[in-house]
Length: 261
Image 1 (cartoon, rainbow, N blue to C red):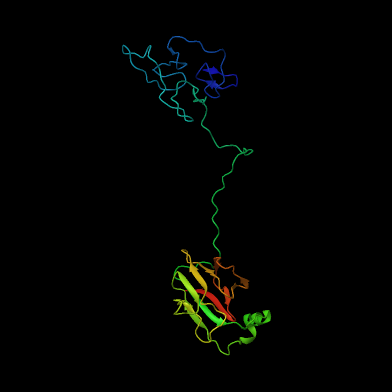
Image 2: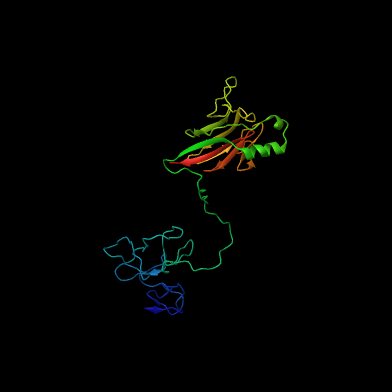
């Protein structure tokens, strides 16, 4: 058993089987050594480095046969022909790699892991839930429209009576507006029923259901616009809506979304 300059005990007397350091002078070729492999043949047909020889037999012995390792380099795949890979220099006798110690991260491109957005509370209906749109007349919204002083505001009166109306959201697309036989528009939430809000367009807004059960709203370009929780929607922009959200449109109409089982 040889000892390398670093103090390791090595079964090989040319290079240390632990760290690969040269032990003493360069090994010389001798009997039983394969010049190509660079390793001495060990008793039993093996090699001093611990590999297995797959030698062709001549006259019933392995003497004089070309010794070859039966493994390949784990780094580049080159067949092993010694202690060190002839292609990449990998040391076959080095200990298996353990956990990588903490240290500075080398510079280079960083690939970010995909980010999954957290679900918005109340945005999607739980299993078995049903969504409903509750339509009513909102006096405070009407007063804000009057205060803005539109061209026709003075001629519009708040309805003396406007009962609550409930519309089930039972399909993937729910149109909000006023029906028009000539235009072929028959919205699921038809606001042409008395008391009819004169500020509602024939196709004023559309509610869209997503695959996860959540809802969104889009104003395709109504004449008087649509407010979601007090903020005006940009025409053509799809905006998520949640349970309890308030949608205002026309001169006094409020549509509140409700999700229940």
